[in-house]
Length: 118
Image 1: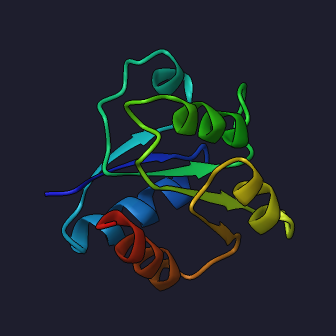
Image 2: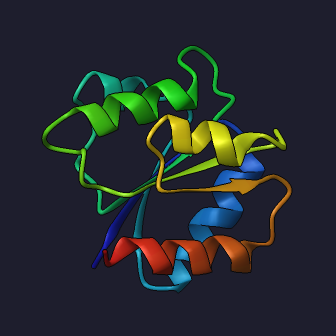
């Protein structure tokens, strides 16, 4: 079973995304911030979904960190943000894809499916 790590501080988005992704057959681990990832305390995933606006370290910085580490540089990262510039800023940080909030859960599921098996 493919493993997804979702770093999102909005409980509503966490719950909805976790439900839709688990129904699609993925194992999902939730974090409200990126501390566990940056400290090496998080289990490796097959795909990371990162919110840009997090308390503490910005999601873009977490993405840069993941893409700069030998163990995680090959793992796809999807960024989430309410910012209309998320597509360009996410690509600049090394993300593989981005979704602008609000988004449809079907869009998230399809984006995950397109990237998790690369």
